[in-house]
Every structure is written in C-alpha cells, then in structure tokens.
Image (tube, rainbow over the protein chains, first blue to last red):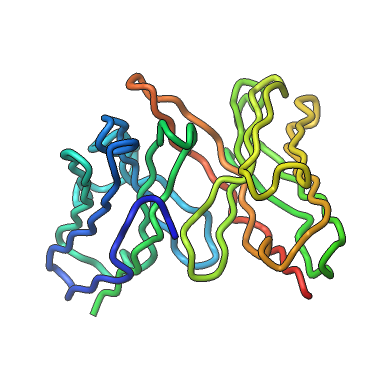
Length: 111
Length: 122
C-alpha cells in the first residue's frame, strides 16, 4: 500500500489530454512538500518528468505539466502521443516517515 | 555519458545473500547522496537505503534494517547494497538513484539506473 494514491490506469486517444492524480495527506503533500513525477517505460530507467510541482527538466516537452494543491497533485499530458505509453508515478517527502514516499504508479495507455 | 548501471541481481533462495553494485559515470559521484529504491511486481517504488555523499549516515527502511547494508567507494564511483537473510518479500527490481534537494526542503531523484532484478525463492 503506497503512501501516495494514484489511479491504476488511465487511457486516451492520440492528441487528447489526460490527467493523473496523486493524493497524499497532511504529513506529505498537505504539509507543503513538493510533488515530483516520473515516467517509466518498460526496460528503461525511470525519468523525472516534473520536479517541484511544475518544473520540467531540459528535454521534457511542454505537453507535460504539473499542479499541486492541498493534499493533492496532478500531472497533465496534452497532445497525447504513442510514445507517452508507460507507467507514471508521483513522489514527495513525508515528515512523519521522515523520508521519501511514492505513489503506486499509473499505467497510461494510448488507444 | 551521465548514467547509473546496477548489477549483481539474480535468483537466490530465502535466507541467502546478494551484493548489488551501482556504477556511476559522467558526473562527480562523490558530491551526491545516493538511494537504493526497489519496485516489486505491481507495486510502487519503495526506498530501501540511503547514504550521504561521503559515506556517512546510512539509513534503512524498517523492513530491511539489520539485514541490508549500504556503502560506497567514491574512488571507484560505486554504490553497494549488501543484502543478507533475504526473504521472498525482497523480490523486486532494485535501482540506484541520485538524490537532489529542493530549496523547499524536499528531495527528488534526477538520475536513475535501469535496475537489477532480485528474485528470492522460498
């Protein structure tokens, strides 16, 4: 059972917009700790997509954006492409556990 | 090329040991704190161990305390995870990851290795 809660799967057609939610609690997202998002394509290393709520590392397209409010956060992907298929997971810090916490991951399928 | 590459995984029986390695290249390894993170089938990632840039202050997730030991050799740009008394619950892909602190006091991982599979049989 992951500390951060994500839907197991989402899907969308090419060109559409999808969002992935990440729900935490008052000891992590609600305490103001930033959310970070990763993309994991099979047989490759996870890659950070969004760090500190809504910052994109160099090379990540602006089709990816993040937001955070209270105990929730979300990742939005616009202009969905086949290459976006993979698993997305959120991560933050928890001041009760005093270490990083992750979501269970959401599998994105491009129809 | 900036990368992390793990090795040392395999299939072992419950109660046995394994030693994982993570070789860093393309960046100043000794400047970064490092994590071991594992991902069991169908589950989200879980941190296992962390070690500071200079090898101090190792910390462990509760379920591996007393069984796992994290260490590093900055002269070899290598991170290690010694895993003893393995159980079936330790079955997962184990990745090393580079730690980055944020100005707001949080932290994230800006570089991951692809991972090495550890399978523990009963």
